Length: 403
Ligand SMILES: Nc1ncnc2c1ncn2[C@@H]1O[C@H](COP(=O)(O)OP(=O)(O)OP(=O)(O)O)[C@@H](O)[C@H]1O
Ligand SMILES: [Mg+2]
Image 1 (cartoon, helix red, strand yellow):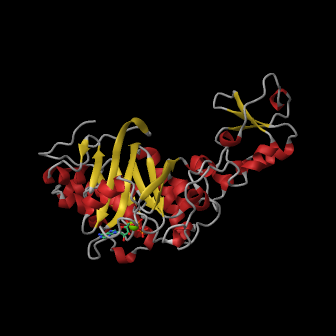
Image 2: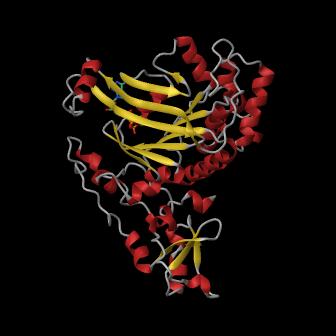
Image 3: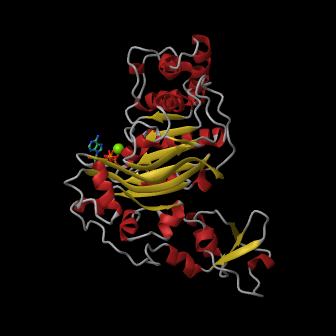
C-alpha cells in the first residue's frame, strides 16, 4: 500500500480500490485493549492473565478487551453490540482519537500507536473520516460550507474545496440544497450532509458510529439503501457501528458482535445466524427474520450421486445460490422433488429437500455448546436483545435481495 506523504498530504488522491480485497487489509486491529481509569496497564496485565472485566473494576473500566480483526479494502464491517459494549471506544481508536492501552491499530501500513503526532494528523485528514450520530453540523454555515468544512481546515483553496463538496452533495442527493442552512433540512437530509462531508474528504476509510440511529425508521432505511448504493461505486472501507441487528445484517459484509468489551464473534450474517458462537449471540439473533438473511446456499445439501432431479423435466424448479429463503417457499411448494440450487454457470451445486427448508426456519437447530449463559454477569440486561431502538419496518433484507 502506498504510504501517505507526511510532508504534503494531498487529500483527494486516494486510489479507489476494487470490491473487498482480502489480501490487503485497510485496517487491522491486533490484541487491542482500552482501559479507562486509575491503573490501565495493570488492568490489561490482569486481563491477559485471565481476569474478567469485573475482576479489574477497581483498576479501571475495561472498555475494549483483546480485540483483533482485519477489515479488507472495500468491505463494510459492522460492529454490533448493546450499549456499553465498547463500540465507540473501539472506533475512536481506529481514527487515533484514543490510543489503545495495549495492542496495535494499523491503517494500511501505519501503526497508529507509533506514528508521531504530525503523521497522525495527516492520516486523519487523508485516510480516515468519521460520520457521527448527531450530524455535528455548523448551524450558521450553509450546507455546502458544512460539507466543505474539513477541506477548509486542511487549507484547501476555496474553489477546489467547493468543487469537491458540490460533487459530494450531488452523490448524496442534495445537489439543490447547497445554499440552505442546516435548520432548513430534515433529520435525514442533515445526516446526508454529514455523509457528504465525509465523502468530500475522499478518504478510503469511513467510520460511522450509529450514523443512522437518530433517524426515524423509514428515513433510516433510505439512508441504508443510499449507503449501499454509493458503496457499489465508491468501494470505501466502511466500519459501521450499530446496536440494531437488522441494520447490521443488512449492511455488513461481516459483523463483529461485541459484549462487555470483547468481540465474541466475527462472521457474515449467515454465519452468525446459522452458527452462533455461543448462547449469547444465539439469543441476540433470535428475533432476526431468518428467511431474509439465510440463502439457498446455506441450507442446501449435496445432490445424491446418480440421482436426477427436476431439471431433467420441463417443469424444472431451480434457484440461485444467493436466493433468500423467503423466496424458496413458493417453488418448494410447487414441486414434490427437492429444489435444485444452481451456481452462476447454471451447474447443479446442491438440493433443498422440503424438510431442510423447514428445519432452517427454527433457530438453534445446530446449537453450539456454550461456555456462558446470556445475562449471567452483573449486567443482567446484557443478555436480552436490544430493545431501546424501534425495529426497522418490515423484515430485514439481504444484499442479494436488494442488489
Ligand atoms: N472517556 C471515558 N472514561 C471512562 N469510561 C469510559 C469512557 N468512554 C467510555 N467509557 C466506558 O467504556 C465502556 C464502553 O463504552 P462505549 O462508549 O465504548 O460503549 P458503546 O458500545 O459505544 O455504547 P453505546 O451503544 O451506548 O454508544 C462503558 O462502560 C463506558 O462507561
Ligand atoms: Mg457508542
